[in-house]
Length: 217
Image (cartoon, rainbow, N blue to C red; front, top):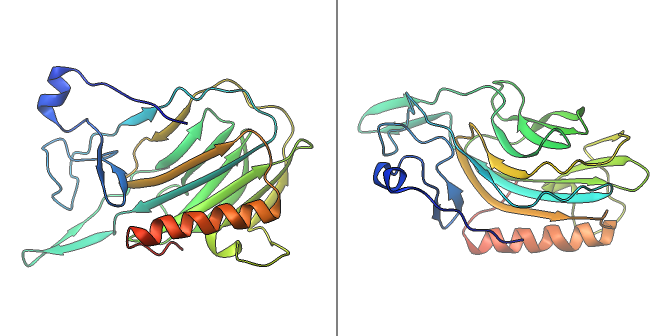
């Protein structure tokens, strides 16, 4: 998918609520209102990127790669401690699919599908980049995999699984919302990828991130 977004002249002048890219991905989902990265984000302004992708789905596969800033930063002989917002959201499609922090618990993330918590407390260390694959087949079987659970050989063992009934709604796919970090990849298929396809796609994601100098968890 592809999309564009525009900002008003006032927004552009402020520059605190425009999205930016660096070699790792898209950031400024929780930049300080005062502008610039102080390391503390004392008064963060949170933004959500809403895409035009609003397809109502049944079976699907989503692969998302993100990085979260470290909980503390040492600069100019000062240690800045990051205030962790509750339920930082990486990606969401209404309540059909949500990848978010486990409350305010550091390095801990949840996956919600169809309003049901499928995975709770998946590890993704602050200060690193992680990838999650979420898959739901036409029978409502949901499986969640961290990057390290998808290697080059079969069988694959999911980090979490559940049976979730119902179809996706036409809610728009969004990225961000109180995320103090970066989003590097966001891939969605309107079908359940096979295990060999998951291996292939996660391998491509690893290569893409490695080209940016990042090893994902």
